[in-house]
Image (cartoon, rainbow, N blue to C red; front, side):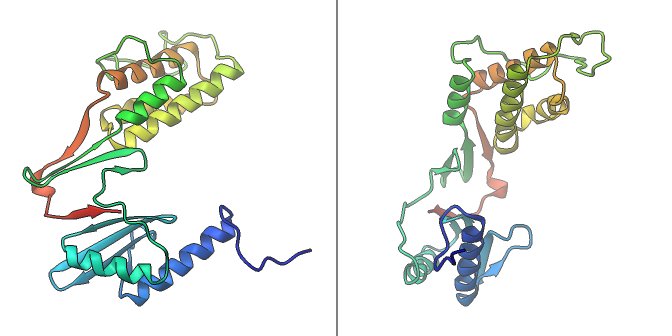
Length: 227
């Protein structure tokens, strides 16, 4: 048996150790840990605030003070070697567009949609425009459901397609959230009807491929987003 003197990257122990070290350093800078998400840290300094959302070693900063952001980066740089990527425009596969004049923030997943369409061979398929047929019933005892079960390979593809759509539904495409949630109930024994339905939501994603979720000015303060 050997004893590690340094934790390895991409291990559970390594991730835990990294988080504890990051937390210790940020707390020393008077940051607090968010109750809603322990990977989110915040600091309030008078009328100024700064929020750091950490995804392992990738930090996203939201603040209303450029000087506070600069100081925080300098403080962190004394402990870690930072790479300043500037104002944010991309995060976890989501494009981020800040329009300070109109006071809006827009989130989009065009690249992700293109990627999953290509993955499942639907790039050239005809787009669809409706998220769900009126009165659609996907329960097993419904007369509109085919009795034919998917093959094991088709079942795996079905589960992967549902997972891919869920990421869209929770990030920028709330309009398909209900339909995807309903179809996810049949992962154990999906029928050909369910596969046809899930493909239609991929085609709907094609139709709205360039659409973005926009947060309006009533929710917008002059924040500065960066990484």
